[in-house]
Length: 176
Ligand SMILES: CC(C)(COP(=O)(O)OP(=O)(O)OC[C@H]1O[C@@H](n2cnc3c(N)ncnc32)[C@H](O)[C@@H]1OP(=O)(O)O)[C@@H](O)C(=O)NCCC(=O)NCCS
Image (cartoon, rainbow, N blue to C red; front, top):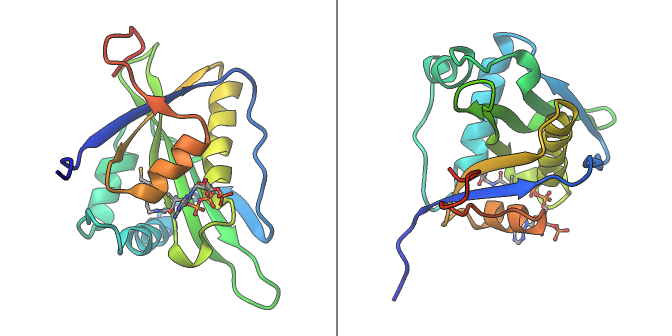
């Protein structure tokens, strides 16, 4: 019998500062203002286009609701990975955002909207983005990261498993 698709809550405890390994030809930067809204929406559209559980098209208003209007939002919370190849214009090929769940002071650091465009996958960019976020959490004093993903998003599940993420124990005090 097929199991029902579900939302998975995963977490990882950090025992040392992650050392992100940057893939070749990638330059990382933060959100730099309204011109990045369309850029982010395009990466999201391309990254999720072939997912079994699809996601609807978003507009700038959705971006505003999801990021800019949040109490935790700041431009440094969003990373955009640009591919810079010789003679070619630079193009954003991946992104991740460090969100916060819950109210201060114990707001939990959350991996939010990790996405890598299909043509740039399996080169270590997803892992680089997540470890960059984890290093930022570590530098801010955090020692645990949470995230939600979908049981049918297998690439994401494999990535998180390979990085040591485990299902959240709902009975633990650090649970969801
Ligand atoms: C999930 C995603 C971000 C991974 O990006 P990526 O740049 O391809 O990931 P990486 O190259 O860093 O992969 C790191 C590890 O994850 C695992 N992995 C990633 N994709 C995999 C796949 N298709 N099959 C099996 N393992 C995979 C592997 O262990 C891989 O290490 P390896 O290449 O040395 O074997 C990308 O597939 C994506 O954007 N998917 C659609 C959007 C999505 O699901 N986002 C997450 C929402 S929670």
